[in-house]
Every structure is written in C-alpha cells, then in structure tokens.
Length: 244
Image (cartoon, rainbow, N blue to C red; front, side):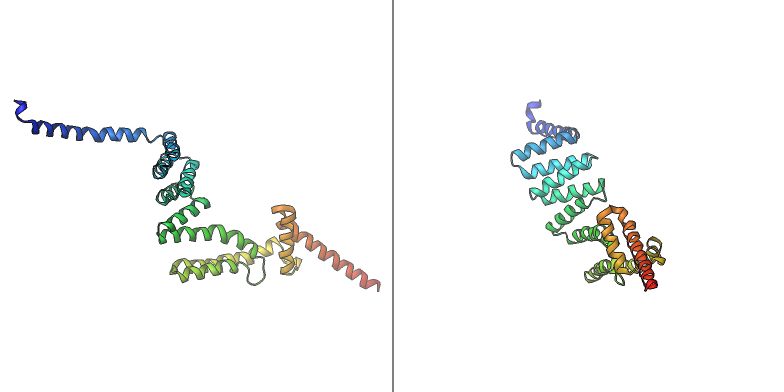
C-alpha cells in the first residue's frame, strides 16, 4: 500500500525533517554561545585567513560575554582586518559594557564613517569632542585672562551650528556662558584668593609651573609660592626705600 504513494511518503519525511531541524539548530547555536569557544573559532578562522568568519566569531563572543576585554579584542580584530560591519557592532557592544570608553567611541566613529553612516559617526565624534577635549583643556585655559575657556567651547559651539546641530550649539553656548564662566569667576577667588592681588599671567605661569614640578598639588602650591615671592619682594622694596 505504501509503495503506491512514494511522493506522499517523501513529502511527509521532508516535513518531519523540517520540524526537527530548527530545534537542533537552536541547540547548536546555544552551545556555540560559549565565549571561549567562539574566541577559539575566531582564532582558527583567522589562521585560515577567513577574515569575515573570524570577525563574526569574535563579535559573537563579545555579545555573549560581559568582559570588556573580549569586546575590545573583537573590535580591534575586525577593524585591523577591514571588517567594518563587525567592527561597528563590536564597538557598540564595547560601549554598552563601558559607556565612558573613549577608545570604543573612537572605533565606533571611524567604523561608522567607513560604512557611510554619517549621522552615527557625527554623534560619536561629537561626544568625543565634548568629553575628551573640552573638560581638561578648558580647565587649564580658564586661567587665561578675559577669554579663558571660551577658546575651547566657543569653536565647538560654532561647529555644531555650522553642521546644523542647532540645539547642541545653543546648549553648549548657554553652558559655557552660564556655567563655565560663572564657576570660573566664583572658584578662582576661592582657590587663589582675591587678597593675593596676583596678575592673571602670574597665576597662569605659577599654576602651570607648580603642576609641572609638584604634580596636581602644584595647582595650589605654585600660586602660593608666587604670592610669597611677591610679598617678600614688596617687603624688601619697602625696607630698601626706608633706608634710602
């Protein structure tokens, strides 16, 4: 009886195979989610010069692991072998694990630029500019008289306005004027002191020289030494004038 319907039997067998295959495939995928095994597969693929397969394995290892070093390895491996799609995904995973990593954001921005994702690249580079450039540089340049930290944040704000990021530009200008400027005018008298009557250029030179000599403590030690020198010089000048 069954011999009369070979096509029906073949069709039923095919349907049964299709019903079993997804579960088996899912089981295999679950087994392959071990980060160590995926890293080993990536190393083996790299030795065979199968670069897309290696980048894919490394990226899957990064997604299966909570270790930032694995995500960094996956990003660098994909980037070094020009697998920009995998590099972008691995860098995004790196940023999930460490949102403050400047290296991860740098890789993500370059990979997005290579993939012609200009909006994503602009976002990453803008974040780099704000976090890695404004804060430390403005802290030192705020010692300059008159212009101070505006030398840093104003060009960035103009750049934002020029590329059409009006909101970011306006917010940065408001932050620079209302926060950076006012805090500078409030903190400088507290840290350096109004009674020292030191010129701004002396404050700048003594602060930079103090930090170069004494480290971070030189931020206070440098202006103190300068103030003591100015006071001693004033006393010496007064005593010499009294003798003459």
